Image 1: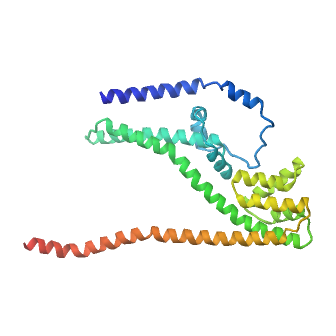
Image 2: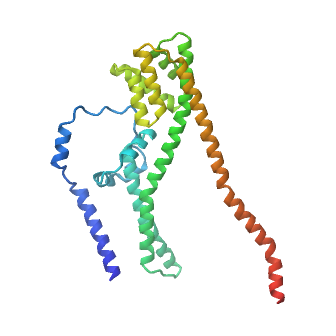
Length: 298
């Protein structure tokens, strides 16, 4: 009876996924009215996104049904912007890895059957379900980890950018010129993002601090949003921001050193367990002959 229920549930889930993929649900009247009453269209993002890769080619059929389920979430979309990836690439990768996770355990019974060993069908079924769930969730965990590393690297580059802006302001450059010159000097993907934001400001006739604020909101880098606020005061009110930029750069360096020390201490704590296990194994290796001799003489 349990087998019949499990098979029926799996068949029903497959039919439902197929129907959602072929006939996606129509938007409700409330959502359509809310979209029509939107005050202004959303501004295009400053960050470029890439949709290429093997997952985008092989997992393209899974993009539409997963998007109908509301994936990726708003948090994942911000992480994708940090990495420069399109949402379709993440959905395709989730679909491909989930299918591979379901199918790969089914090869184990075939290999065992070739050597004369048989397994009940429940074993590969449960293993395939677990691997499929793991393959579906794994891209989310990998996305979150890489996005956090990217944000940390961007904060490191932003501290150097603040010092360059401060030096340009001390040399007599204006606010716009100091921002542009400092971005042109630096190298790396973080400075490339800042240069793109400043270029977008020139092309759209917007102020540089507006595009910097937009970039900070897209990347979820609070320090860049604070920088745009400080620079806007200098550009609109004529405030002197050299001292505030120097203080902000020093605070960022202190915060980076604190985070580096915390990560080093955490790594040291994680190494304690392997060392203890190695020491216990060494003691067991030394004590086993003596214990075996004593027990054998009884």
